Image (tube, rainbow over all chains, first blue to last red; front, side, top):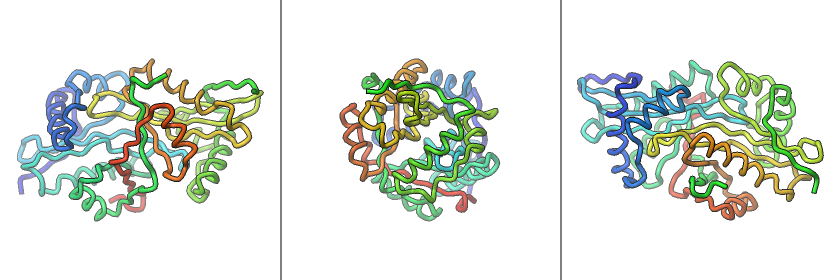
Length: 155
Length: 155
């Protein structure tokens, strides 16, 4: 197995992250929805108010995947959690345990920051991912549905 | 109709918010899960790193409901959105349009901050809420399921 490291992304990684987002969108069959660019990412991740954090995986020195997360908040717990916006591993690097390494790093961060939960969404047809999450002990919040209001519908 | 105002919460409202959270938990039949206190809320909402924001509704000068939101992030858009963690209106104040006022205020904030989306979850059996969201033009993201890893399962 190629030596894998997980590291924090920095400003100079934004072009690489934008490319990975395009690959993820293709995997999710949502190419038309992915309009993030290196510039918008730099502003959102490294601007005056960072809205999210990025981790990168490197295998044998090559970029193998990324993870983007932010802090959500639980009213019931009265404290923050971590929401994983995306985890993506390039096809040729799957099976190396990179997804597990991302989750392990996120767990560490959650413990350091006293976060109560780690949450994320999964597409219902993404069975390999669902199997992986079940093995970790994650719970499907099946009685909840996500609703979205897009910009054109804002009052 | 009693005159309704929506205002930003401040530090001195945390006890009231904690009480409203208990009422919300009872409505959602999740009383056992709501452990937030005035102290944990003060830390999370008004501490050195605020994790979320609270709005309060007052009707005729009385506390009628609350809304808690935070900024999420869309990888595909490369920019932040708003996630509504909770909206709750006390039973005696329902039907006054307070839910709409909360959504209108959140829409304003989303526009000011150039947020791409407003998102939230709803319990599948909460038909009054689902009808309200449909009228606003919100889209159910039915092909996604939320997964949760609780603290006891962190690696």
